[in-house]
Amino acid sequence: MSQASEKRHFSHRLRDTNSAFLPARSPGSAPVRVGFVLLPHFSMMAFTAAVDALVTANLVQSTPLFTVSSYGLHGTAVTSDLAIDIAANHDLADLPLDGDQALDVLVVCGGFRCDLSEQLLLTRKLKLANRREKVLAGLWNGAVALAHAGTLDQHSCAIHPDNHSFIRERFPRVQVSNQAMVVDERILTSAGPSSALEMMLMLIERLHGRDTVRAIREILSSDRLADSSETRLALAEHDTALPEALRSLLRLMNSNIEEPLGIEELAGYVQLSRRRVERLFQAHLQTTPSRYYLELRITQARRLLLQSDASIANIAVACGFVSSTHFSHCFKDFFGVSPSQARQLRKS
Image (tube, rainbow, N blue to C red):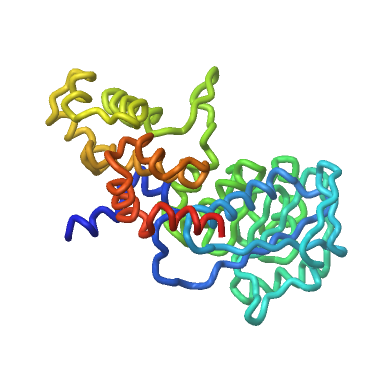
């Protein structure tokens, strides 16, 4: 492999961060169509958590992976559990399960105060979706609608604890799980907002792989709690799975973007040999220290380029490149377009 073509590939840590800005891969299959049926008093948190995963999946890839639509039981106005009226895209009667616009995934979004009685039109839609071998999902107590349609018979399901007794009494052929989510081949259920997000991430991983999910998590978990007393940004330098010496090296690199340190200098700061530093990077980040440092600086440059009006020359200096020409060549090696083209594309 030539050096020029090798430069087009980020190591796995920074590949996820930059995935949405990399050259588009060859066209694949059409986006997966996901439809949400919003029951009256549905859980806004569970719904938005699930949708957030799908929308973010589209943001971390150069081509859309999913389309999202919503459906109300009786018209398009639906009241959420927060007493906020939401305008669904369509009425349930218009939910498509055949033809070019047919949904691939159908999700029923319930909530703490949702009516658990059978909705006949929804039951018919779910039965038809099941016959068409669509993926079916339930959020909070959305599994109750799946049970009414018979799609959970002899299956295990996750549902909010408040509804466990109801399911056991009303649907004896459905197995109630004590897990927060249950993901089978075609049926996915979750008991609340956090598990709704995780359930959708599992679906995304199944369809589009771990790299896509890692990129989504990097965005959605950027302020996750590291312990009971401190909120820390989810950066590689905070990753407790990495050795402390490597995290110290990453902190040094992040703190010295404009004037990059040499590998010998980095090694001296952490009192390790150059060879030991190189082994740490190769073992845990699958790249060399100099390569990772370059990727870190080009990532910082990409952010400044697309998020500020600073000149390309000033960005090059701020990110430790010896000249605008050198920066432009490196940027194009990674992203397939020049800095000025990238800025123009972002504005279009």
